[in-house]
Image 1 (cartoon, rainbow, N blue to C red):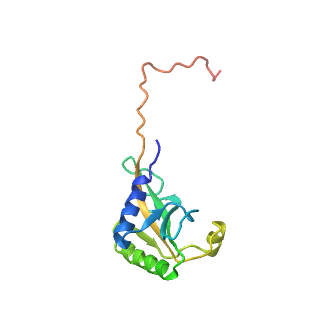
Image 2: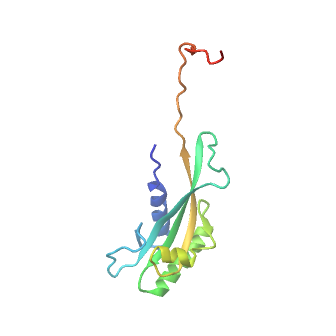
Image 3: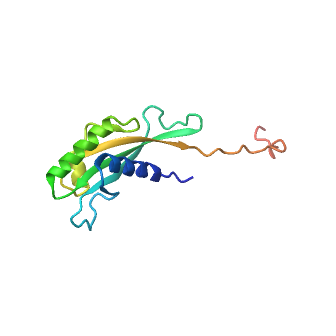
Length: 150
């Protein structure tokens, strides 16, 4: 079973567009061709199991947590700061989004080969249905062919 995260990404694109106005959105950390336009980067940083439900399925459902790094790619630092501040306030008031207050550590920026910049880490739950396995039908009793206990 393939788990699809596109609907979460599309929900974030819609939320960012409605919150900030006409903004270009990319799933990349640093798009190669950005021209003169500013981009909001919506990068899926990690997928973990939910702390509340753990990895154990509840009612045949597993809850994952998708952590996204939101950054703004622009040469205008005021636009970057204003956009991140606007998105942070909107995320704090959104019922499906949890804001990760600690942000990225310096070594995480370095590992991605990026200069630290204003950003926002958000967490969104994703419920996944586990595949139901059909039980094997036993048609006749199992017969041992040899006696181990002699």
